[in-house]
Image 1 (cartoon, rainbow, N blue to C red):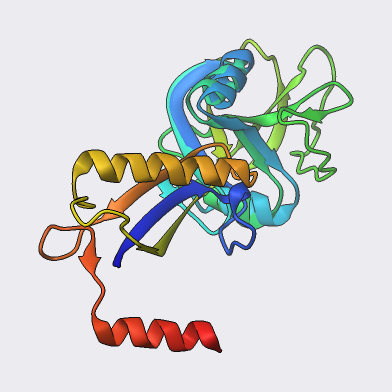
Image 2 (tube, one colour):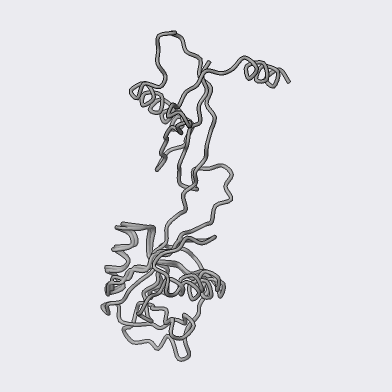
Amino acid sequence: MEKVLLIITAAAGLCAVSSLPAHQYHFVYEQMNMTEAQSYCRENYTDLVTIDNMEDVNLLTSMVDLNRMIYPTYSYVFINKTMTWTEAQSYCRANHTDLASVRNTVENQRVTQVISSTPEVWIGLFRDSWKWSDGSNSSFRYWNTGEPNGGTENCVAANFNNSGKWEDQHCGQRRAFICYSPPVSKKVVRVRLMKKSSSLDLNDPAVMEDILRELKQKLKDKGVDGDVKLSWRKQSDGKVFHKEKETEKKTTKKRDEL
């Protein structure tokens, strides 16, 4: 009997139980218009950021001046390239998850921390009865005094020169923006295999690849699909599989009998 450690990396949503953060925020320093930023976030992350409450505001604000950092909520990526709101959305969706949705002051502080030199960045809110880019139903608002001031300014930028407060602006203006994406979970699982043939070398790369392929199919059959990556963990001697010692066999058998 051989045993080995298997590393499973997967999106948090695939785990039945997870202590992972809900989101990762991505500040995109490349300035885009709203459409470009939204597309970018949706293609590369999830969407433009959604801001739910003052904790989000403070979180994003606290993230200013950091290029990239992963926090207990989302990981924000600041794109230092000016785009319109629509361009920023497209960019986030293409390269991350989406424009950042900021739901509380903590997230707002963290978004602020990843801001570099530009004070105003696109987030995921736009006018259509003010909807978030990712479709979330957050009713939190953090408008600057006198905002929104109507007209044809149908997209929203957070001004981190003013505590991350929001301003409605023309969607064609080019600004940096914030995307978010789900976190990734990594689990190490011990696998015990029984060889049917004594001549089979479980440490053969082709054999290990076949085992991974079969394990992934079994996960898929059980409804665990999506961005799941399996890999073997090598031991100090460079091998993956090792024969189980007799004492370990007895311990395992006793545990199975309990």
